[in-house]
Image (tube, rainbow, N blue to C red; front, side, top):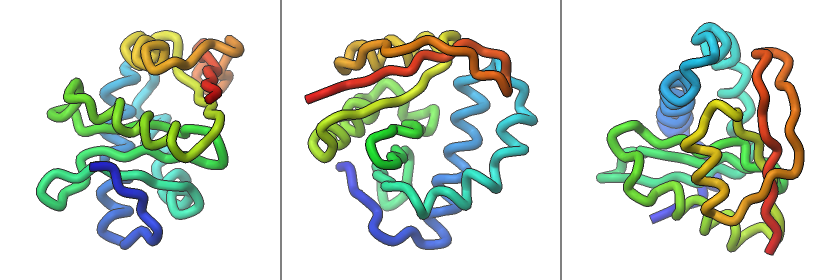
Length: 143
């Protein structure tokens, strides 16, 4: 079940930060791992400012979604649990709580791109993400 965290405990913050780092390194092999390591602390500080939704298995967080305003900053799920429909549950929760959504996804992250298309998102724009010199799609969904 998807749960929105109203207040993030220190333990929850550590759990989601670890999932964020590991998931990004696994999903974005084309991006140097140092990029994720270098941004780890900054992103960790941003989590409490976002709407964080989590999915738990036996009280352990195995995935989360972060949203700022109507922007899905990301959906991150531990590798052992991917492909089990948890990502769809996160998207459903987002659609229930926001009339429109936007996100960005690297062109080379084909599985994520295809997932968002299946969830009703469309490409709004294609742009160069300059820090990593990678093409990314800005995708949107409207109720």
